[in-house]
Length: 113
Length: 113
Image: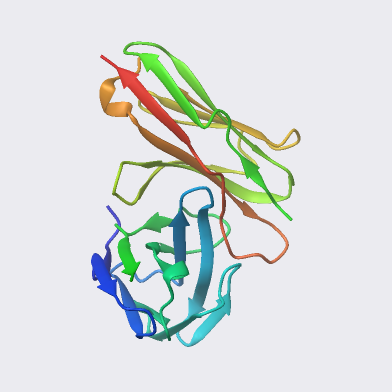
């Protein structure tokens, strides 16, 4: 299994509070991604990174920011959590975009109350 | 915009049956297609990756085919077992500068003993 660790695995937070989710990889892969998974919507890309300090938006990026200061760590921050951000969040990694598999972490279940 | 569809959304079969899961995509300009398995409450496990130049890939009892021109892929599972019960997702990586995987919503497979 690819070395991807997400933390925390579960979190309950209150509306309006900031939340940071962490993705850590030991594979030295260049690309890292944050997805959210919701019933009826499937997996949707939030943000991705193609190198240290190089990030870009996905299809559902509003209300989220990311940072990547080291190859191995990719942080997802909800600046002010809302109930609509209750979801399961997955981190993924891949090496060369065009030719290699993507590997996923175990997910973080976030509940905003 | 690339869209990925998986039909049916759910499938129930008796143990031992051979079965086919379907995935279709709207734009044939892809780098590759990947099949994943997801168990309840878990992350995605990569099953097979097919490059755009390939027609099929095999791993054990699994065989995935790709017909890029018609925008279709199938995942064939031979001699199904109760342990194969899971949700199966396909994802394509579009050409044209996009870095993201585009996912279908999955087929939930139940194999009954």
